[in-house]
Structures are given as C-alpha cells and as structure tokens.
Amino acid sequence: DIQMTQSPSTLSASVGDRVTITCRASQSISSWLAWYQQKPGKAPKLLIYKASSLESGVPSRFSGSGSGTEFTLTISSLQPDDFATYYCQQYNSYTWTFGQGTKVEIK
Amino acid sequence: EVQLVESGGGLVKPGGSLRLSCAASGFTFSSYSMNWVRQAPGKGLEWVSSISSSSSYIYYADSVKGRFTISRDNAKNSLYLQMNSLRAEDTAVYYCARTVAGTLEFDYWGQGTLVTVSS
Image 1: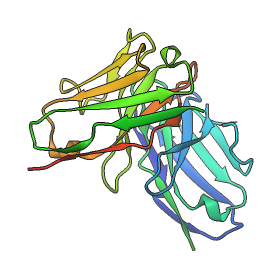
Image 2: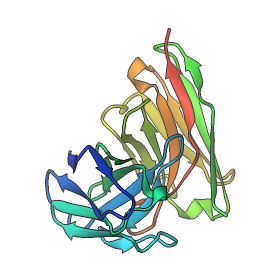
Image 3: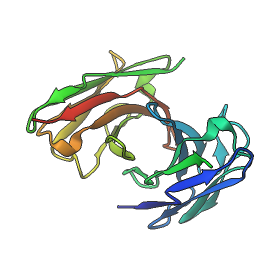
C-alpha cells in the first residue's frame, strides 16, 4: 500500500505568514494528489486536486505543487479562517490514503 | 445544492453490527462513485470503502475487509455501509463522500455519524 507522510505535524504561524506543508508518497503517484482542510467538528473540504488544480470557490492564496513522490501545499498569506488541519490524499491506486495531517495553529 | 446526510450511528457492543446510511440529493446520484471515510476521535482520516456508480467495482481498506460491506440503491439515492464484527478500533465518525469522475478526489462530504464500539 502507498503510505503518505506529511510534515510538519504542527505548524505555528501568524496572520500574513507564508506557510508550506509537505507531503511525501512512499512510491510515485504521478499527480494524483489532493489537499483538504478540516476544522474541528466539521467535514473535510477539498482545496486542491491533481496536485495543483484549485477547487472552485477556494481562495487563490492556496496553491499546490509537485509530482511523483513529493508535494507541497502553500498558503501565500495566512488568514484567520485558515487555522485548521490539512490533509493530503493520494488516489493513484484504488486504495485511497491520507497523510496524518498538519495542524496550523496561531503563533 | 449537493447534500449528503449520514445516519445510523450509535453505541454498539464489540462483536455487534450496525448499518450506516447516506442520503444523497442535489445531484445525479447514479452517475457518481461514492465512499466511506472514517475519523477516530482526535485522529486523522482513514478511507474505508468505495463503490462505483453501478456497483460494479467495490474496494475496501484492509482494516475492514471481510467485516464491512458497502452497497448502494440508486433508485433511493442512498449509500450504505453494513458493519459486522465491530471492534473498539472501529469507533469513529463515519463520513460519506462523493468521488469526482475521472480524477478520483472527494469533492462533497456529509456531516458524519458517530459510531462508538464499547461494552
């Protein structure tokens, strides 16, 4: 099975900061990677699909990049609404796998 | 508006069974693959099972294979998860989620239903 490893697990940042989260796959997944945002008590929300495509309605401060085994999610200027947990997900094979999550906290 | 509403969660004893349902509206349910994803308290997301639009293709995570059965009724716009031989480690919020055709990410999620396995 393909394993997904996110780093860091927790990130402390201030409003206006540029934030980068990394996700590594245990084997190549081409560009079959998505990023989700989850707030406490809520369902995940799709942000990015196919590694770098922005989901409709998602602010342009969110961007994704990478292919193969290494991927990044970048928030160009962190806003108060962005404090949440972020998950990557691979879907290269028919056993979808999530990363363990990165919690973005207020510094 | 796309809506997914889960139901059927609750408290069950180890070894027991439970059937979850997900009622879909606001889109052509029969055209989309669907999924169950779970989240144990304070933990991350875990994909559980997927079913194609016509039920021709079904996939399970190893952790539930042989115990859980996914199914759907396109006439009723409903997705199901039959959970048997439940264990304490199955305790989680269970979400249903829609698969985007062609690229396979999950674009809409329900609000989740809590399953607690405890004696």
